[in-house]
Length: 192
Image 1 (cartoon, one colour):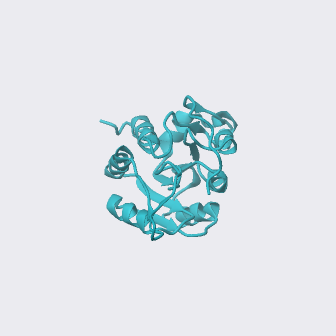
Image 2: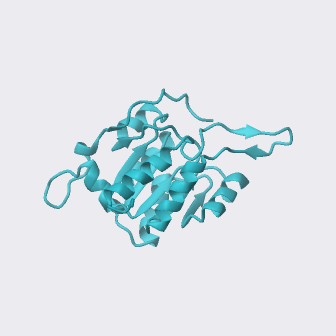
C-alpha cells in the first residue's frame, strides 16, 4: 500500500547542483542532464497511475492510465528514446498497458529497482547519465541513485522529492510522464 502523499507542488529542480560531477569537475545542471537521456524508465503505481488500487468483487485488479502519458511515451519512442516500465507488482493490467505502449523494457515483480536499472544499463549498453528514472515512493530511491536524471512526480513522498533532480508540476497518473517527455524532447531539440 502506498504511503500518504503530499499535495502537488510547483515543479522545481531540487538537487541538480548537488548531483555527480562531470569530467570537468562541474556538476551538471538540469538542462545538461535532459540532453544526455537516451532511456526513460518509469515506475508504474503512482507514476503511470494515481497510485490507487481498484479491485472488483472477484479480486481482479483495475488501474486507470492517463491517455496523455501514453501519447507522451509514443512520442518519446518515435524520437528514438528507449522507454521502460519498472514495477514491483505483477499485474495483468500493467502487462496489458506495457504491451499497448510497446515499451522497449519491462521489469516486473518483487525487485530491487536499483539493481533493475543497473541491469538495463548493462543489457542495453547505456551509461548512467543516459538514464532518466521517474518515481514516487521510497522503493524508487535505489533507482534514483543509479540514474543520471531522477524525477519525482508532484504527489511523491517527501524523501523522493528531496532526492530528485526535478519534481513535476503534474501528479502521477495525471500527465506527469507527458510533462517529463516534453522536457526531454524540448531539451534535445526533438519536440518539433
